Image (cartoon, rainbow, N blue to C red; front, side, top):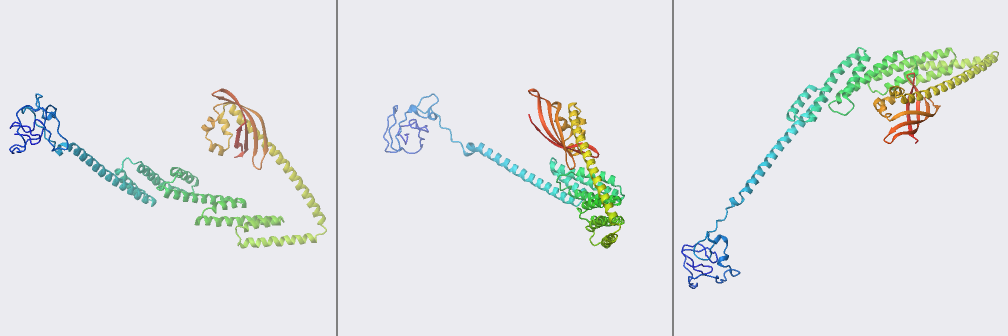
Length: 471
């Protein structure tokens, strides 16, 4: 048998050419064109032009797959056949398994995400329904909705926060009923305390679940304010105070507020009429006319005030006529007027002197208060110094913050102090030297401070102040 590729004779049992490695075709006749070859050792395969390039591979250079187990090549049939090519499944099976695993994971993740999204959407819808119920005051039904939402999302903090808000709103609803009963019983102090607690629990922040009770608390606050006005109205006997009450009530736009306004107007008319009558008896027509004009500003169409104003004008003219007719007594009246004017002048001078004395005393008291403030700081008596501050200053600055501001201050010396009286308060200007501790040791700093000092509840206090470091 001969190789159809290179023409080398091969043993009958061979499957591959020992010279070129071509698979032998058994059972087929050898082409007549191939010349007979002697059974001698082939040193070099003949060149056949069937391939694009001539084959030059020697027998001993055959691929290892065609070499015999004992390493000899080119002779006999002692070689191993090439292994069959791997199938598609064997070649790509691992990759296909990995791809299937990725597809399964992606499908599972998508299914879980879809399920989770549905849960979140359902919980959000329950929260929305709870909010709508809360705005209608149905807190128990809203709480049930939130409990259902919490079962869907047990770890959702917003649901827990909404549940706490609903509990607060429910408590406020019940407490506001008690406040209304207290006001109906005219227990205004108890109502004031209860309402303040409710307002503190509801807080100042924006929360839709609490808005209904906040509005209800605001309504009760207005009603309580009107009840306070009614109480003050009974005891008020001064037009100025009544006018102040009117200013407060005019800010409230309710039927009850308008009813209280009418009561205030009636009281203003009553008080003004009584004061004007007294001034008429004293023949103080201008003062009486001013009182009536003020009252007419609140009750322009009040017939009693209009009549009273006409009486004042008539009596004033009659008085002028009597004055003109009483020529004999004119001199006496002039002298009396001069005397009255002199007394008035003396009274004004005395009042001015008294005011001057009061101002000087106030300035001295103000300077003493500021000095006492720094004396307490130097003695580390922070509570004593803090007590000299006004309520607004204390409200804006807590005691601990106040003390922390002076922890590095060992002592303070007042270099100079001066004061000037204002319209209401005394302005105190002070220069001080402070011994302070720092990272570099003890240092001495100079400061200039300006304080507003005045009376608060009958006690001299440092109401406000500002300072600057000079060195």
